[in-house]
Amino acid sequence: MSIPLNSFTVIKYHSDDIQIKRGEFNPKYYFKQYSIADGYKLAVCVEADDFPEEIEYVNLIDLYKKLSSYTFDDI
Image 1 (cartoon, rainbow, N blue to C red):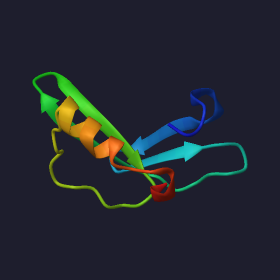
Image 2 (cartoon, rainbow, N blue to C red):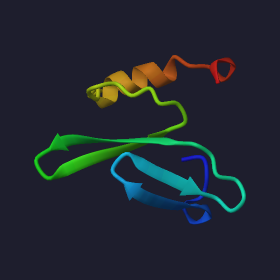
Image 3 (cartoon, rainbow, N blue to C red):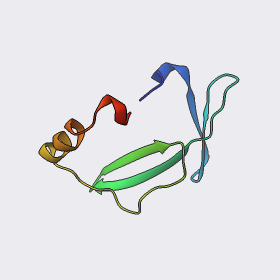
């Protein structure tokens, strides 16, 4: 997360209208919730309304390989 948890408020007006309030600055974010197992949900917050239909599960070794292939020039 790129902003401190105590610097904003999440307000849910109804299921498809969730907003973040940060003082005078109220950026537009989009939210989606995925069911990942019985009784477990995963919530995602992004700046662009472009969510995949399903989440992709990645094991730790594949994640490490992907992350270690990046350089600071990629950021």
